[in-house]
Every structure is written in C-alpha cells, then in structure tokens.
Image 1 (cartoon, rainbow, N blue to C red):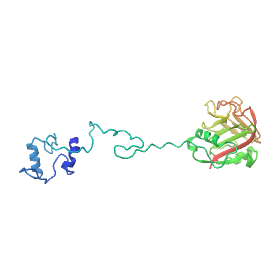
Image 2: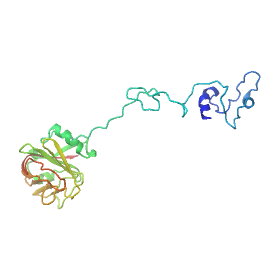
Image 3: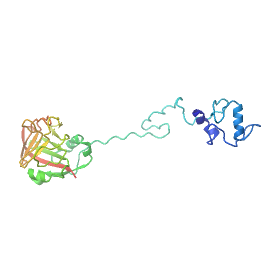
Image 4: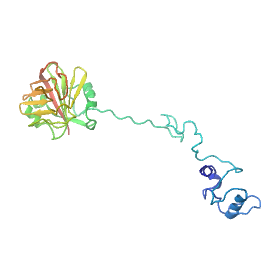
Length: 272
C-alpha cells in the first residue's frame, strides 16, 4: 500500500491515496464521479477504498517519489557525503569542525616561560581554564621578593593559580594549583594540582593518590607536595631560595637541576 501511494501520488492527486478524486472523468462510457470510479475499479478486480488498493497491474507507471526500503538506493545515498562532494540531496557536505586545542593565554608576556613553553603547558591545564586570559598577579621583578606579598597579591579565594619559576641556572619549572596560593594552617588543594618542569622538554607530574599533601603555606615557607619529610617544591619566606625533591604526592623528579636552587624570576598568574 505504501509503495503504491508513493508511486502514484502524482497520478491520483493529493486528494486521497487509495481512492480516486471525486468528480474525475472516466474513459469511454464508464460512470463518472467517486461512486462510478469505485464501481469500475471493483468490477476490474481492484479492491474498494475500504479494503485499500491492491495490485497496480495495468496502471501506468510514474516516477518513484521516495525509495522503498527494499529498493536499491542511488550510489552515494544513505552514506555521508565526502567533503567537497555533493550529497544525494545536492547540497555540499561540510567537514566537521575540529575542536580548538587547549591553549594557555597570558594577558602579558611572561619573564619566566618562553612562547614555545607556554604553548606546550596549555593542554595540561584543566580544559575549563583554557582559552581564558590569565593575568599576572605577582612577579618578583615588579613586586619584590616576599612570600607575604605573594599571598597578598594571590587573587580571589578559590581562583586557580599558576606558579612559574626560573632559577639562576635558567631552569624553568613550577606548579599549578586549582585554588588560590595562600597562607594556611594545613594542606589544601585538589587532585587537579600538579608539578611541572622544562628539562629541557616539558614533564608534568600529577597526583598519585598516595596522600593529599597538595600545598601548604605560612609566612616563612611555601610547600607543594610532600611525604616522608620531603617536598616536591618549597620556597623560603624571602623567595630567594628553594628546593625540589621527589615526593609521594606527585612522584616527581627533582624539578631544578639540583636539589636546592636560587630564584631568578618568579611569577604567579591567575584568572580575573
């Protein structure tokens, strides 16, 4: 029934499918009108409107308006059209949009990281924090060497922070904190925290799950990662000296070329 309706919709007209339009003229001396047509069709062996139209034998053929499920489709139909080629509807297929890569966008140039290093670090940040401009909250070249000042300029509570360090031997490394770097009575942070080092290629050290010693700070010492009395990264209250050792929190390598280092430049970046 469905195939017949599709094939002879143009022939029988939109008035009905399965019956002839009322008032149409039959060939020869056959009765006219809907009743006459139904009588003629019944006499010829075709079922009436109440039974639906059956065989299409003897009726003229017309162009198929819609392919049946068991009919073979033209080549290319039912398949996604290739880029630059017309689909079976005639429209040109559009290539799917590629996701934009995660980027670290700094509002001003960094004195610690080069452009290439910034591009390498970006994809390792949580995706929700990329494509947004990071602002320089604190830097030793502008604000002096003071951990107290770093806490004071650390940004809004709960805002993520990026700590960048370059030591006097030109080694670049640092830490990402999912929350503000601040003075605290205990350790704070989340499993998104990580340490990283360019030695010279980028290495990222993520949370191992062994403990939650992400970050802790007081006026005399800032510590990142810990366990068994060793810190993944630490800085003194004057931000002149620091150190790095493998720790259980991040299972990191020594970030600097040696266990202890002297700070040349230090920056803290955050989201506005």
